[in-house]
Image (cartoon, rainbow, N blue to C red; front, side):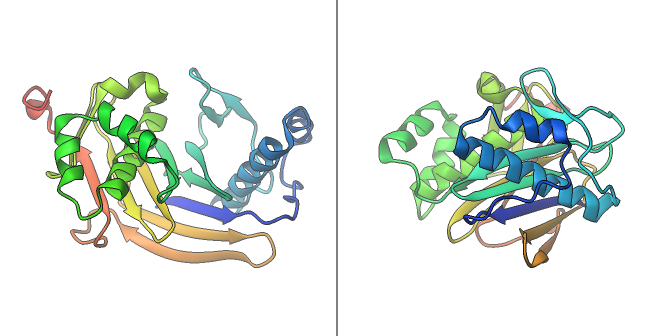
Length: 247
């Protein structure tokens, strides 16, 4: 069974909330308008994905885990992660028993000053890889997106920034929180996305959702493929015996 990455480009129409619990919709009324719209859209997208993959007609109850990470209250249900980029909302639904972390960033949306701040916080290996790319600004955004997806998966947020090291030149990563992680990141025309997953996942299904047209299957990615695209990166955890060498 695959993990699923779905995204939805929002327009001015209101999200249909018939698959959401009434309590969740009522809670959203206290949010500012823009945040409320994205909050409902993300959970609507998750509900539609749960219906498509598992046949569950209404979004199950959601709670906040330690660190504020949303998850299903029922531990038997799959893990998920939510992200926003501009007017796009995304959801990553993991295989059963696996974990998920999703991040999306708009290409060239960050100022030069912001990218320099990102670069300052990266490791020497990450900086070396960025500077070797044809477009260092794009590469900087790609590394940031990869990091954010993994930190969402571990539940640490930016508090765990120093516990994570990426080695993109060798396709490896090291996290002191989780021993086994794999992350897939790709650069599209307008957006960079990264999905962090447990190693057991061997296929990632990409979907696009439209509230009038429904589902459109974009791509099925073989996670172990040697060639996923010219701007795609796949990073996996270092073997335990090499963790100290790269620390």
